[in-house]
Amino acid sequence: MLHTMDEVFNSFNKKNVDYITFVTSLVVVIGIAFFILYNAESTAILIEDYKNSVISVFGPIYLILTPICFIFMLYIAFSKYGKYKLGGNEARTEFSTISWMGMLFCGGIGGGIIYWSGVEWGYYVDETLFGISPYSEEAYALSTAYGLFHWGISAWAVYAIPAVALSVSFYKYQLSTLRLSSSLRGLGLRNVENSLLGRIVDFLFVIATIGAAGGTIGSYMPMLSTGYSEIFNLDGSFIVDLSVLGFCVGLFGFSVYKGLTKGIKRLSDINMILAGIFLLIVLFLGPTFEIIKSAFNGLVFMFTHFWEMSTLGISEQSDFADTWTVFYWAWWVAFGPLVALFVARISKGRTLREVILGMLVFGALGSWLFFMILGGYSMELDVNKTLAVSEITGSTHGDLAIAAINTMPFDTLMLFLFCGITVIFVITSYDSMSYVIAYHVQKNSSENKDPGKYLRLFWAVVLGILPAALIFYSSHQVALNLIILASLPLLVIYPLMAFSVFKELNVKETN
Image (cartoon, rainbow, N blue to C red):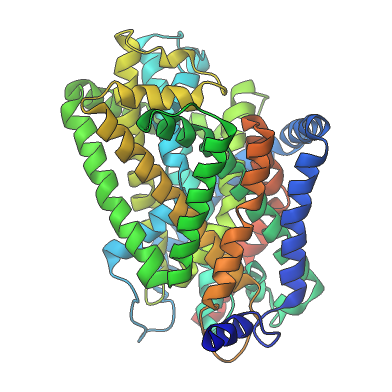
């Protein structure tokens, strides 16, 4: 007991914790949750108005930023800078390539891949983009292509910018803390973390992380509740929602408490195996030929229309781009720094080329497999009029995702597997968030060490506060709007990170 108390004290000791960052982070979590709950209807209207203003004013910036990130990352990967090795030429990798890829994918995607991949195409099939008639064969190809586009190489390029910038600084300067401000060291600010600029950048990171994290898990909970209610024959209710959230928070608290190797790595390894089994079952017990055909058509459409999809909404206003593409690019921007901090921590001994291509190729490929197989399966249900997925709305999204699984052979087993994979994806994503925020509030010192397990556990619990508030309020749209608002301040930081890493790598070359 005494030993445990000593561990708790050491985890929260002033020598180890930067209390300015710690307290401001905690206040942000509680403040946003209180703001949502205090006057729910007014808050929803206010958040919606702010979101619309952000899209109308800054929407084109998101649309321009994303392809620039993609081009810049390709340049870094295939230029002389791609050989730069994190931690020095003698550094060895901490994790095997398979485990590293699994952690990278699970930490970067979370439960969103399960939530969206099966039914997202249903929102797009009635669009008239690029001269295509709604519900035509080409429209189904377009709807598949847009899922692959929004979750593909462009999205992972947005993740890669902060990942590269932070990784270079973290290992070059042998930092003992992971802070977004450290990614700006290449600008010549050697103690940037304790400067006013650094404090502002780190504060914006916390706001973006908490808003994005709360928004995503807040939107997934209803789907999980529906799934578990069907498995255990329960009436869907607020208590079930809260119980599922408590279950998830408890599991990711335990996982982050166990640490990187025993917790997050093992969960990622298990989930990649379970997800692979699940997708194979869907592919081979479902309409295999139709799934492969829709996947092929979607890929061909995406690659042939990639530039048009990337620039839609830039030169002239597009309701579709405002509603969907801007939303997704904002999502990736909001999560980018968080994923970057986690990627930096697990990528010692890897070259920048490995990090960038690992994210762009394996990250995108993993996402595509879900969209092609699950999306192709539900598309065939719609075509055969077994399940009207194309009539999807935000309020029916989760129910339709569960209904599609219920049409599969061994429906209860498949639903149990589906919900289990979703939970583990959510857990691994939240684990990385808890781990990173615990790192984020840690002080820099000459001793390079992971944050204490009780500090990690504390933030795992705290990060459950905002999703709980959203469940109390029960608004899917507020959760999604929060993601867009959370990403806005980071639009300023992204160009600074790109410039910083370019300068840092050039200094390396001339030394």
